[in-house]
Length: 307
Image (tube, rainbow, N blue to C red; front, side, top):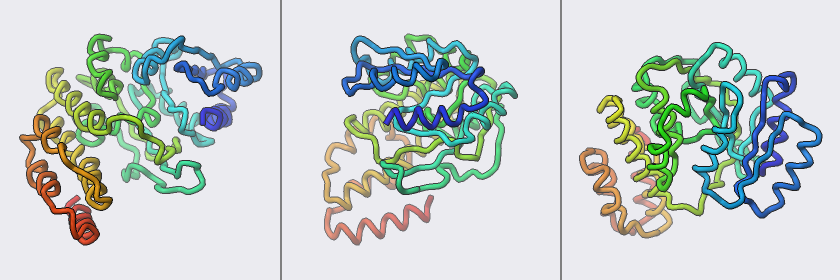
């Protein structure tokens, strides 16, 4: 998938070659990535390639990349994503205005990019600026976890101490904490409504979903309270995890007749004070599995209306 990603960036980078560097960090892959990339190095001198001697994990690999950046801004792209032809041009216009962070809209595609699933991930259709990081936390919450949609000012992203970044390594998404840490107490952020990234959908797996997206994100959000984020903004972001991720996952498990055992015990320590946990998640977990199709369709329609 890296070849598709690289080709899209190289196409978009035209006329900006002297202002851009591409850094590839090969996390000790065994699929011939090194041979494929070296062919690109011959034709494109703005590409730099590093290979780790051993797999250091995705989160550490991201941090190693950020420390190798020479430029003022960082755009961390997952190797399974692609960028649009006009992406670099749009981003260059924003960073020349000295924003700390550019949050970009993106489109969602099928795994083989043959079908467009969603034109706009974020429904916000107009450009919007932010100076208060609490407003960003309230509006975007854990969606900053999709780093392919973010362009950071380097000084902002590496502002947090390494030991605090390391605390979240085992729970995933330490870059979310790094982003919110770097934006506080005052920031200059812009949201770009034009999709510049093509997200490859249905291409995740092989990890503990609840550990990362439920527990890990909750730990990050609670930590933000101690650096000065308001309780209101943190609580709003916490509730969005349940509304946008957990409820859907439980409904899918009900539909597919899969076990939801243990989810209450897992979530209770982190979400016990939220009404949405008791009012929505707990009733869903107590629903008998039959008739599954009727329950799924009925509850899904109610949840959509509530949202």
